[in-house]
Length: 386
Image (cartoon, rainbow, N blue to C red; front, side, top):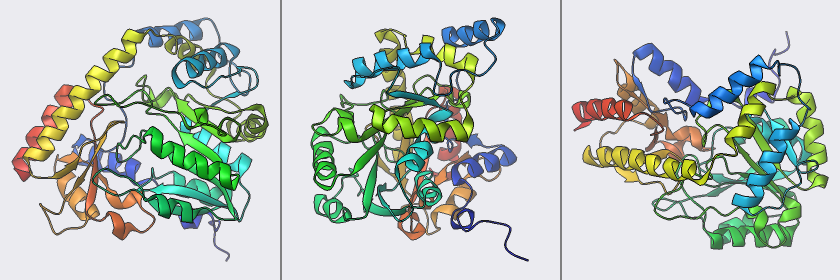
């Protein structure tokens, strides 16, 4: 009998991040693994969703996004990111940033092309390349500041390079690429005629005065960049699956075609609520920054107290740590030991590397949690590791 699995599906595993959430539930632990807030989404946004459902906005929206939401995305992208955006021709609403990424790759990359990926990387990017038929070329981000070697990056560009995936603020490290680093990336993209697909889902979650720069705003990049973001992180609604990508019409047209046959469209009433959320005033985003800074500082302080080497993030809501001061176990064994019997769930660092051996000394903590959750985790960590 022939194998039931396709060759593509056999080349990657299920999500380690989501598996750790399942293990956490089974063990009765505190989940600092998967990147979702355990606190309420904004009340006005939830009320807007309820109104939309009661108003019977329950059938298909326009495939590439309800007009009102696309207009809201265009306004915010122009105002915050500095990217002039036409709601009619430049915006595609997807079922989360996850779908936006695979739709963008499937629409622009052919089998045999190469895609440059910074490593460690969010675990979806590897399977996304496989599904698109592309070969990933990995460029290292090196601790403690998760910088890359310009020469290594330049060497990764070649005649088969079609695209580069740029994630800033970065999951899992919290790295925020500087303007100078992005200018270097942009220069190479222009020189080699390469597309950039940017995952900017954490764009509002920044620390210590850091600036978010969208690659599409740099010289020569507007026509060759797909900018991806979404509702999940900034508006604490990961389960709503509302994401979007912004690109000039020549890139948007093929993305819309792929998106149509992947999912048809995102949930119609939630799109209406998302349009309201994108109109929140400056005070919402200022409060977000204050609250996440407090969460980051609380968790980093505890992790340092119990003896981890902590790579404090400049953005996003994760902290990577080196476990070698605590154990000779590898990352998977240590993570399983830490969650067992009502412990703390984390993500093994090896899941963020093409060669798992490169991440065997790392684990990732998520701090997008209520203060009570972080305090419970701190108590457990002090008891087990302090």
